[in-house]
Image 1 (spheres, rainbow, N blue to C red):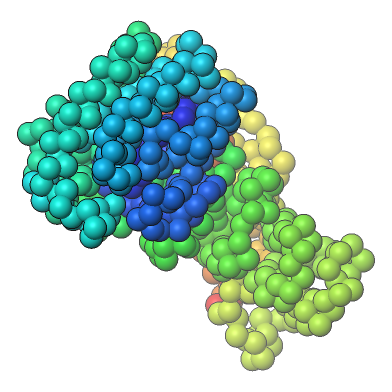
Image 2: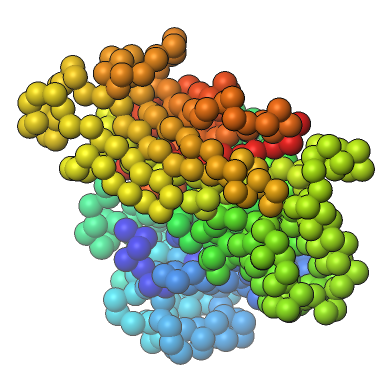
Length: 611
């Protein structure tokens, strides 16, 4: 229903909670249990303080706020009097575009207590002026809702009730009832809607604050619910079943989970905050633009939530190739980019691709002062000599930062020309600079197409892809059962065969290893493949080579990546003893970043390391 609004103008007598609800509600369509916003706060969840905000209990206090999104515009004005020169200026703004679709108004307590002995009489006169002026200014289709004032306590204190007016603390609640009655009749006479909040909360006094005036977040959630129900009724919109104010359940999307997490953290509601932490894994894949993920990461930095920072960094690392090609990449903070480059989980085509992305970030953001820090995290050793020699001629940062680049390039050439025995004597080969990341280039990986049932969905027995090919053996009997998903006890496991160099060092470029990659959905299919099947648990991925040809100084820290739609990474698993036990592909809840389509392929990545 909120999506039908192009503009919403909200006007509350008490800004503390109403505007917070409307910001979260208009954007997220979810009204949340906990929140924290203070009067005069510069910004709350993307809204902006546009006027005033300097706290005072004077009748000249002003606070105007605005929230804008691609589909919604909310204006909020704090009133100390229903009609004044200030109100005239506001209504003059209404006469200009854009005109409001909904106007929510209430003003009472300040009016009848802060303007001298004739406050109540002036309030009545001002109500007439205000409602008359509204009829002149607003379009006929604008929905105007007059909110009646809430019940006051027997004793009220602080805030608007200055010491000179303390004698009103007993009688003011009765004056409010009289003022509500008169204002409701007058609003109705002018054709405006009325929402009787005094009646709605007359038995909810346990939620009233100690000052006798303000109310808890629970009541303000209920006010939001009442307003939405009223608007829906006025527009003839059927509210969908299952929404929050029917079921008391939240349906959270990626763009709203930050709001919920923030409020739960502010109020130390650990159960909701921890639940949000679990939701992040499921919700992060929803936005292919990476915009919402980066906003979450910036929020985590702001509140120093290390756990949430870790979740976001892992997602960025696993999808670094797509992330580095997005427009959002350049909005990453220098601190965040530095943390990402230190990640051992980073998945990228090759190290030079990462180098180019970091260089572009530095140049576009004009952060040359970070060149040494960020380029220090690039693993130049993992680039080929042909690539390394091109950097001084093609890098836009090289001339200004030779003191950074020259030692790195010399160390990389050393890596490619010195034997591991000499290298170990002079260098610490345990340093990450000597270890490959998870490179997806065909020089170091292969993709095995499968489905959640464990076999390739494509017809054909052999398919070639660059330096690798995979096989989907034809069935021994019953082709229709094979291709159309029927049960076939003779079905074998899909496999891929490819070659890599023995190591990333140029010394091993011409020494090739042949690899066999398999995905075994169960023991029967493994046995049907005519190979040895020593596995106790299925499904399992296996990546084997002729181990007797591998030098003793080299080991392999290989990985498998479970892919959805052949690009989104749902899960990464290290291989041990050439195998990796995988979650069931039919149980997406076990994946770190699950996807709706299910796993469609597995990428096997070879990662040679000196020992």
